[in-house]
Length: 440
Image 1 (cartoon, rainbow, N blue to C red):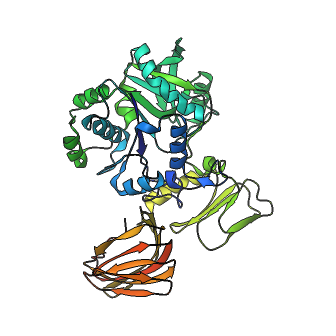
Image 2: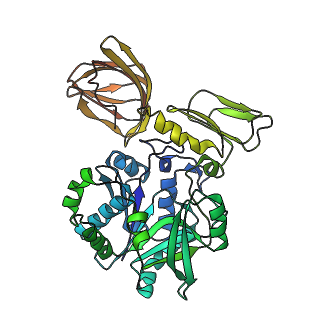
Image 3: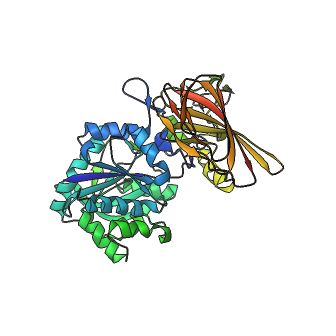
């Protein structure tokens, strides 16, 4: 039997300000959908896996803070497990394999395919997943990869250098090169090297042997307990580049990494998303605006103008990747986040002496609820802006409508269920630095 583990990681810095620590790029609803609307990267991948007949054995591995968000964007159709800490692609893959093995879902001789959840490829790409079991058996290899023919000599992708192709359509992996310079990328293109798609297939028994080699626990509970002390480990470096028995399947169709503004903008349905417009000689410019404030570009070609509660970016498409270093140097707490129940936006932070006030806009999805909690360090005021629902306050439930207000003092229990989609303002006040955490 074959299993697919989808890894949901990344810090979301290259597509700032739309993506970030809380909402990574795979959750951005920007890609054209078959029904004429838009869909997220993770939604597109789920749709394609289902169409390829792979949807029955999918497991998502993500950081624990994003587990509820993954469930929301996948419609609760797949199992999701959360890592206690981000420790790289190898560690996430190992956790997924141990989960499948410990629960009896996967046997040692089964095939496991590990892939990123934000893949962007054609349907033929996913059909190739069905060949992994056959290729591993026929080649006698311990690892099988997917590589795609490069569309151009990119210095942003890793490369696989294959040997001569066997009759089964696969080739032995000779070596790997990670993001070479432009001149070297040209040479690799001439040598028929492939872009590394980050897709790896192997048997669970192989992963167990690698954990033993590395001196790591091969039992799920012990491995999970070891997370705080683990370094960040890459599957490419720890496994693929060390293997002398790896083969690669060649994909001839479409595959892209939508991890930059230059590439992502090519897939948008229209040049303007949100409030605003493009005017004059502004060829090849795009606007993606999540704010309620119009954003206009006049006479500036080849730029991306992106705005969200996290900030505003205006950059040449091919220079926009520099935002990653800028964000790293000017790290600040997130102002926008998404949860299983909806989203929150921090509108303002203010301080008066020891008293600190945070103003937050909450959006609660229809039928979802903000669970009943109590705040030990802060007081709140809720003001209902739109929609209607039911507030629970100290065990008493009350219907609420636009214009209604609620004052919540220290340690009082409070929660809300949205009968329709709701928006409300929360004004949270605390004394000192012990502010209760923003919603997760």
